[in-house]
Image 1 (tube, rainbow, N blue to C red):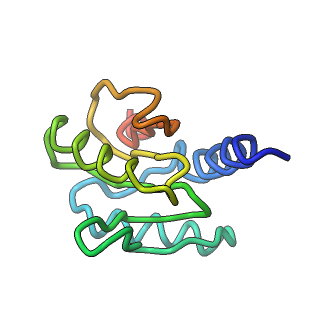
Image 2 (image 1 turned 45 degrees about the vertical axis):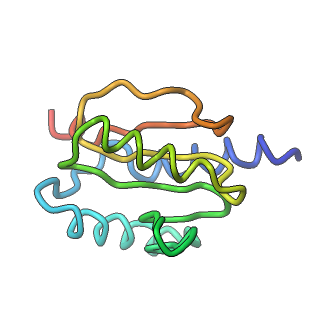
Length: 123
């Protein structure tokens, strides 16, 4: 199976684990802990606070998928951070998990990008 298809299936698995769940959305660290518990309970191997380098630490890293959790930052700040992550060779795709309604590109630096809006579960 080619690497791209493996990445798509992994992102799909992550999205299925998170979509529709009512996560706490008032504190980013509390939200990250809740997501991590969900990953552990579903045996999804992951790294938390994964260092791409000393200045770039992604919230979760799962076999090439960089996952960033953002609930308070502005759209431009979020984009710039994700853009930096997508410059690293080990990042094969990026998943932004947020409660912000915002546009986001389908690719950054040739990496497929996905967005999950956790706020929808509360509607």
